[in-house]
Length: 227
Image (tube, rainbow, N blue to C red; front, side, top):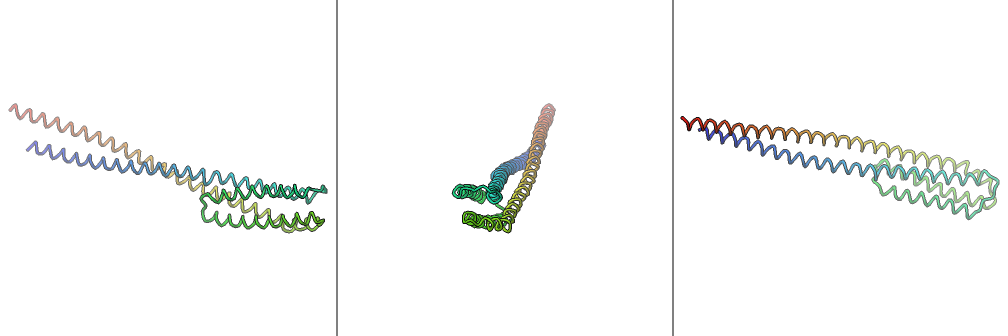
């Protein structure tokens, strides 16, 4: 009867150990998934937030370069080379278009899509305004060119800068949200690690319990045999 009782206790402990092992495997799977999600968050933060934010700053630089070229022609008495002016404006326009195409390929939230569309429309207006300016300047209509820039050009450039600022702010906002999500993932990974440690300690306690039970049974059996 004592032997049957011992076997029954060991079966209970074995079932408990199997349950703990299953929990350990599940925790391990969840931990691997958390690590994968954390890795994806870092990749997204770099490829879809950090790099695009730098590209937006480069667009701002090219936009200001275009504006400086136009103002240097309008507000100076120097006669600019028509082909040189067109070439410089075209070069900066090409740089902006390339950066925008690169930016469009990244992951964009709905707010960014709307802001990007507004920016592209604004840049198209600036391009048409620049073409009219160049045409006026080299058709001896400097006064008309200056008036066009004062009435529309400045406002267009300011609007483009505002759209770019909004996009950069959205980049920061979404980037902060990704960082917060990553922090939650890290916290969850710590919890999984602590659970694994607790289960390991529990397994150790159960093993000691099994050994202790076995020793007690052996001692009792020895005493029984002596009697």
